[in-house]
Image (tube, rainbow, N blue to C red; front, side, top):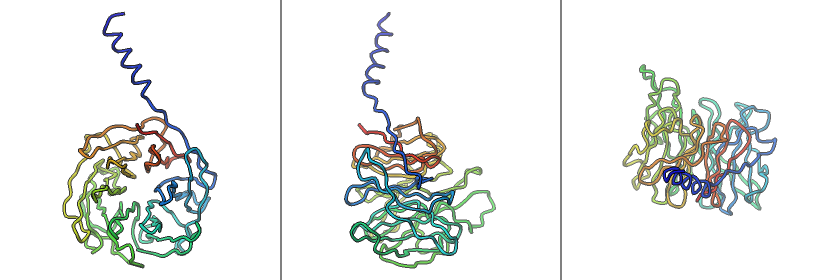
Amino acid sequence: MNLTSLSRLASLAVFAAGAVSAGVVQMPPTCTTPDGMAVSPDGKLVIAAPNNSRKQPGCIFRLDAPGGTPVKWFDVPALPASGYSQPMGVCFGPAGELYVCDCQKKGLARVLCFTFRDGQVATCETVAEGLHNANGVKYLNGRLYVTQAFLFDIPRGDGAATSGLYMFDAKARNVRVGNTPADPQCVFADVTRNPKIKCGLNGVAVTSKGEIYTGNYGDGTLWRLTPGADGRIASAVQVVHPEAGVKTPDGLCVDAEDNVYIADMFGSQTVKVSPDGVVSVVQKDGLNRPSEPCVWRGSVYTANYGGTTLDEKPLR
């Protein structure tokens, strides 16, 4: 065996020794579709289940500790006009309140706020209603940033599609929107050029510096947005371009170092984007239409929207 072969074997051995395998968290039968995730103030992993088959009600699960079994926390009340709820994006506010995007059908989506007493739901109020597609939500400085991946009523004529990032006062209630970039709540709009996948702004994440990241699902891009003092977007920079190999950026999250993690649904991968824009693959195997990542207790958990599991990948 020559020196080149020995060197290659040594490199493979080092890689194998440093490799960290993924674990699998099986959701209970009452979850047919896991999606949005967030870490609660008391350190639990919270998982939204839109349960698209409608065989189970849309609900919220909780995983108290790694290696445990997720348990149903509560059902999200059905919208009378549709007869169901479809919770997707979730995030916590500073007082422990939980904000939930109830995706629904065109013109029926809403953003809900739940408060708790002794671990049980105390109140459920509507922050915003009448949305076309409430998808991702994050809290920042007293405001909620919500993605609408589809703004259906924008006439374009060029085959492209419009989506938007909306901002709401977290204390506001029953805000109705017009679902166009002219809405005062729309602080950033994007156009999806992919003629086959017209879904636009989808996931949203907030860094420790107060930057907002959101991805265009159809075009495979990622934006870094900087809000001004009034919360509206002061600058926008595209930090991931289509040639980076992220096919369909869905849910987003950040870690303590402000790395951004992306669930790439049809790329069947979870990727990491460093603060300086370097893209690397965190997990490629075993994922089934990944829709949302969440960093929790030293691992990144990825929801398999096409299945009934979460994949856990320890971070090094």
